[in-house]
Image 1 (cartoon, rainbow over the protein chains, first blue to last red):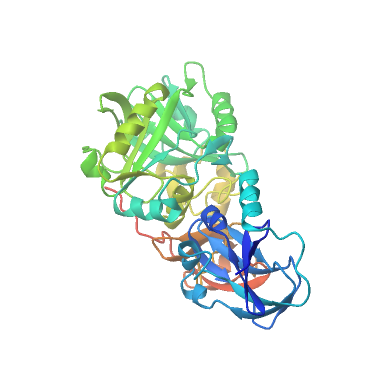
Image 2 (spheres, rainbow over the protein chains, first blue to last red):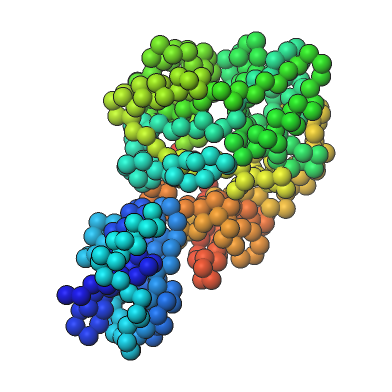
Length: 123
Length: 335
């Protein structure tokens, strides 16, 4: 399974035709306890880099971006009632949404090694 | 670590904001608030001199007692909020870190001959807060009592007060003894360190103002719902800086007033959020003990009654909310 990362600390994993998107363990750690998420409507057509979700922790509010252009095909409704899933399981049960890509992936996505270096350089 | 009022401050320790907040409400949490400004006012007439700048009753403060007060400007605006204590032979002041460069020269400027202001930059301040504190450090003091005492063999000045809505102590100690004292307090059973994040969510749930967010030089005490901090005697004499403006606001009612706000659902409305119909959220976030979003802000008088429906504008979307009584969590002071 291919997992890629963005400089905004999101991960995306290919899942059939679509890519599943969430925030990284580093991101959830920096945010602290998540108390609220606002997810996009399924069916929404999004551009790469567009802010389409919001995650709020006890500390602050942050945008979550569509890492690729395409259509939102599914969102993780479980997060609405239990946003702490993002802290407990950021790369699994804490996923945000799935996007069916409309074209080629952006060329600035990172593999896990490159992302680890990105985190190191930013801290 | 984050910058705050020129200091590098920890937002959280190992428990995280939520854990530290809940731990303070159920046991005891230690906060390092040494950034706060401490000072002494010495000499005959010190209390009368300070009363020129504040409507608090300072002269009526008995030895061993502490009180909350406001420093005002000529327009009745709040220059700072502060604590003043009567230590018998002197007054002891604690002011906000972000305002000490303003407050101390202002106080200095009204002092008559024989009264001296002595800043105490070499003293640290630790706050041990929570229901377990009374058993860990027994004291005969009641809420807002203050006295010199020894903790772990170190001389301190402790007051039974805080910024969390819980029982607890605020402990002034020589900076050179601060680390030893902090390590001792952290070694007491059940004490956890807590950072700036929990300090903010605790004070917000307790309905306590943060200078710079909820109070500033354009806000008068009546608007801020802090009229209770004006001494009875002071409301007869009206002999403090800004008295005319405060009296006007009391007689005619303020145009806007600080209220508690409960957004519906779980989304927090943070400071700066506009309120439809005029008004702004000045402090807001998620209240871990309330288990929901809580906020304070200023609304026109017509929207100020408890239960009034409000619409907040969060990220361009309307968020329904209601005016709610403060505090959001009951104070548990040892009165």
